[in-house]
Length: 218
Image (cartoon, rainbow, N blue to C red; front, side, top):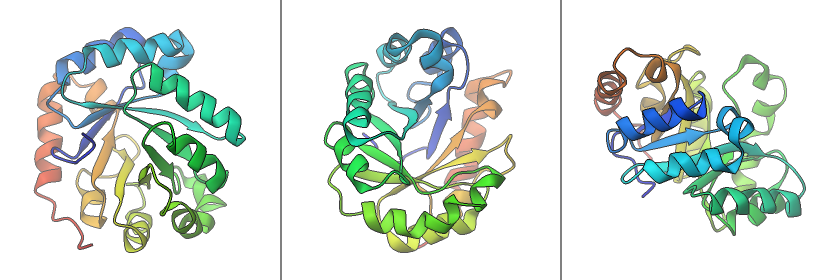
């Protein structure tokens, strides 16, 4: 279910009602949807459940960037799984013991580094070590690496054959297809779709750009 086709994951950083509306409209047009704190802080796990209930073809990736001790992190991912998520995003800097606990519950994407400028200060330095430490953990299906810095995507791709999901396309500055060319499997797009007059056409345009981008060799 997590295999790339359109290569597009839509970040639903909107109200729960809007998230459900967009998910229902774009189900099947995109590979997946990413739900995070905007929805969860508004409605709790029920917000995740509402989005999951309208999906028939696309997968649901829950992004709480889990970063606590192993027992607490596992508990968080268990609740996310019960709510209908197909995969979860977990921070890599907390260490492989946390990642392993979470990956026993649900397929996990590990944050290797982030898309904002401040990630260069600390996270980028640990990027390679995070991927190497987590790559043999059962249940780790991929990594999060930023479309805003394709060199980081290339760095991660040199280490692993697992999936790479890249945020930062559109409003944060990365062009559609940049991350795919660098080796990513998915590009994560939010406002360029959620604020579009016609989300379906916006998704189709982005998908065309990604599909015509030649992926990096593995």
